[in-house]
Image (spheres, helix red, strand yellow):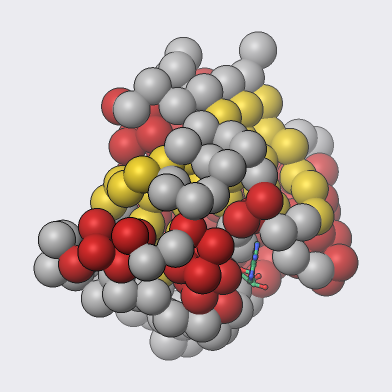
Length: 171
Ligand code: APR
């Protein structure tokens, strides 16, 4: 039975098959979790990312984890919140779905996500959590490769939002 685990922590420390990076469309690093992952993975990551010449919002690209404990890093630019009428929910769904599809393709059994778009990109946390967990739960129902998905919340407010969204999902 595959499952979703909601935890608090620093995604760069997790020894899982793949961690997901909340990137931007240049894929050349930035602040937030993107900056933390690039710092922890080391300079080879930027060299690997440069080869993609960017990535559209909602799409995903995979690289090795380099100095991280994780085998792979999956990079996906989530949507920037513009009020909710610019396809943001669909694009956020795409980021989670395409990241999981890429993970399954690379035979990853354990995958860790940060809370995509809810930092610098200002996506409302409760709405993002609902999109994230619904997408992940639906994907897990129809795939046998990915066994466990960790939602890695960096702070207590994010943890509470995902725990509440998870309870709603399983009501
Ligand atoms: N581990 C897990 N989660 C983290 C970590 C970490 N080490 N560092 C930050 N986070 C959390 C943030 O607290 C937030 O909950 O990741 C979530 C996503 O926030 P951001 O990193 O700001 O990402 P996002 O909102 O998707 O904005 C992406 O920010 O860093 C730039 O280059 C990035 O332009 C892109 C934009």
